Image (tube, rainbow, N blue to C red):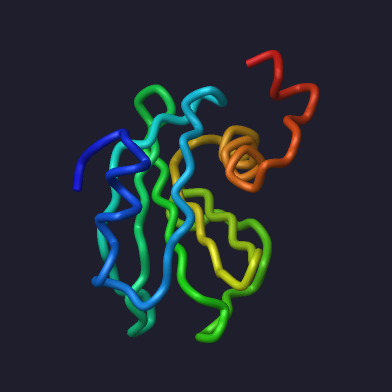
Length: 122
């Protein structure tokens, strides 16, 4: 589903997943919600949210912590930056070709953490 309304994206997962994904409006932090879809990672159905910062796309995958936990942390693979973390019983994986600092700013915004001073100047 392609929409920037979190109140449309979140209900779009109802009955299609056995968990309720976190869908957040981060436009105030410079990350526009574009939409969401279902995907499969390691054989597990996951919620896939799509955000945008300028011309860059951020894919955010999430699924319950009761299945195959990724290692937390950051890495780069084939030119894409990946940040993985666990929070409130869920696993999250953010993937984008944004630079490390901007992808970290996205993760901080999604997690409700304050921006780092250097981020505030962007």
